[in-house]
Length: 82
Image (cartoon, rainbow, N blue to C red; front, side, top):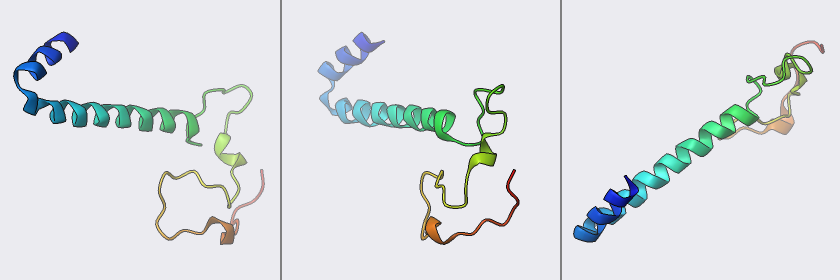
């Protein structure tokens, strides 16, 4: 498949930006999915030692990828400690 892309890019140089943008989009999507799987507090990979990882988060912990106008230092915890 890669060889076919190289042959097509040599025949039609205008396809090179298309391959670059599609490739960078695929890499970006893969990296974002890996971040969700490894850094999200809703995902538990170790059920024996850490069955509920979301309980260890404090009100000042930031786990969102992008938050508009959110200052996590001023948040107060509303729930009880477990």
